[in-house]
Image (cartoon, rainbow, N blue to C red):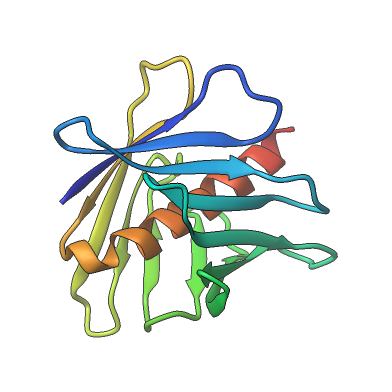
Length: 157
């Protein structure tokens, strides 16, 4: 299953549209006013299905992940010199990335591929393709991509 992650061009807060491979809208992501990033994910019917919330006052960036109102884990950036490294305390997953943080993979505890993420570079706004192996992992994979994008955005401000 492929998801197309597009940031909206004009928006005061972080705002994204998520489409499936045939162009159907699956999710809408809206930023909320808070200390740090707070991204709410809504399905097509307008139901809140997830949240990515940045923890503030941490040495390295850390984001909490919620499915509905249930906490499921967090993603935190680890110190590294050349290759970006993130630790996920959810489902035994981890992330392997490239030098520019444009292409990376989410890998399961046993080494199984959960998703590959690639940034589309010739677009006006951040646009990613998320290729998820199992459809039931799509929402969690999306939330980790949102957290990494928010961390990169904070670093570049």
